[in-house]
Image (cartoon, rainbow, N blue to C red):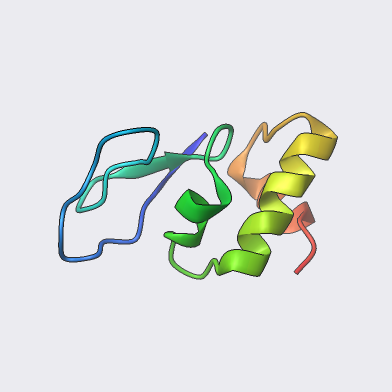
Length: 71
């Protein structure tokens, strides 16, 4: 499951981080809290909750399951 990353005006990439810029995506199955924080509408607290939910429930089968994440 991938979702588009918030565009930041500058392109960066490399390492385990998802690339920034138009068309970049972040995998809900593998993204770090920092990568999730790069998505529109997700801050560091919600990013940590998403990772915790993913760990507890074995991942996301659909993006609709984000509604099950508290906060």
